[in-house]
Image 1: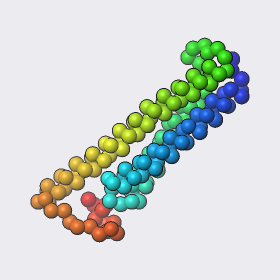
Image 2: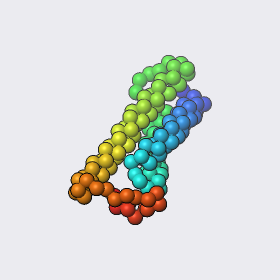
Image 3: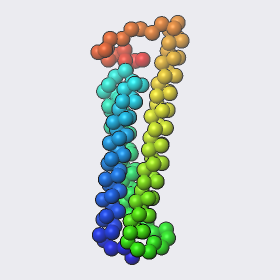
Image 4: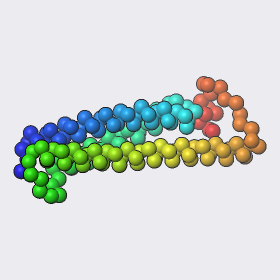
Length: 138
């Protein structure tokens, strides 16, 4: 039976890894979504919403994994390594899912843009850098 210190070590390592991956996703996701949306505020909002979902799922899973005992693990080091490995594996899966969601948002947005362009006879209205009304409609 692992000690309280071992549990806390797993939680701290998992928390740090979750925050690092989350920050990478937020930075990369913001740039990605700025390419998709004409409005920087919309891109920032979507990035924050995805980040909240990521953190809630990742930290919730990490909390469950830290106490879950699917099989007997002998030794403190093996216990910590196994638990951190489970957390890393889950964070990797969550990262791939997040990338899939971002790619899907981008593809849907591009398809909408192409459909609007085809409906308009192939001519897209020229937008100024601060024209928020057109950016939200298109």
